[in-house]
Length: 110
Image (cartoon, rainbow, N blue to C red; front, side, top):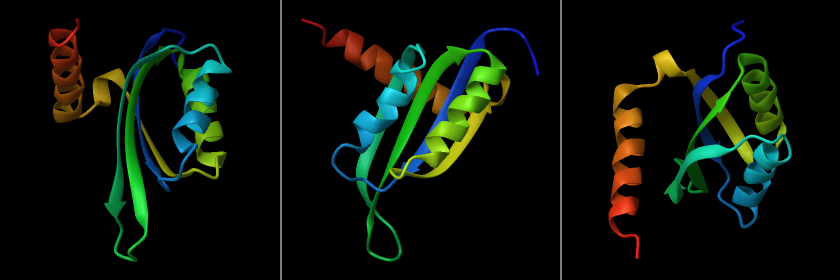
């Protein structure tokens, strides 16, 4: 375990119900962790026909806090799967998409 603050990425598979996003966000705010980026999509049909959501969140934290956060996220009824990545292990395409969305949103500021 490292004692350095670093960038983390979590990818969540959720059940896509009303209030799920708020429950997930409260895990971060309740622990004083600022979310750097939050990109989510709902209504992705599973093979069973049920709807599920996918959420990608980036944030900075120490490794111990990251691991604890992932355990809490995994315990939520709203979350089916938690995948976590340290800064060096974040897939390049995901990192690029997060930055791309950030830049697109900055371009439409009024």
